[in-house]
Image (cartoon, rainbow over all chains, first blue to last red):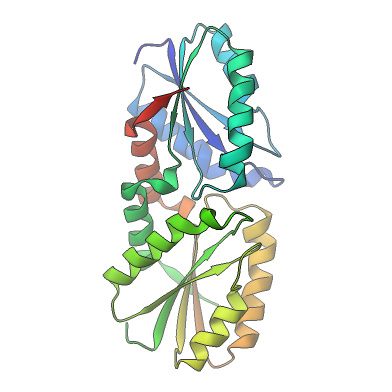
Length: 127
Length: 127
């Protein structure tokens, strides 16, 4: 990827600011693996910026290709209904930009494998 | 683990039944890796069974140790507030059972690594 390309992690958002912490760490990891790309986070709800704002800002920085990665486990109403609407808004907000969209992270076998390993091996504390 | 032990994947839930599909696949994976354990899913909201019901049913099946694994990315109000309440209810519903709780999946380095790889490598489709 050239610097004209960006990866946007599309996440749910929450009222508690601490909720976003793992995604900040995730952004750092992705950025470390793709130093030639800009990596941003966009929030579906509760937090900002939303996808349209991120897309517009990236466009203003010269980005011409945005890869949107939904960091969701399952495909419910948020991904089936809200996400397409927000993606349309993002396209409208950044008309010169090409958008690419992946499936949801939870649909990935490799992600499920990591989650399964976590379920078995993560340290637990007694309740 | 003996058959007296269970792993419960604690997930958010959604109005759309299809949302749960990745978690059904995840349960199969975990069960395949831990054939001596019972593996169940409990929902925080929107779907059933909830954690207390799962715990009671497991207790009735002779389970004496339940490992609860929160399948959440971030720790917002659901994990900081709702989950402890539901865990208390589960303990009350299964008084003879020892409970063990892991951190949230999104706090795991290995899970974040899998998500980062997904963000970079997952096939994308043009929007």
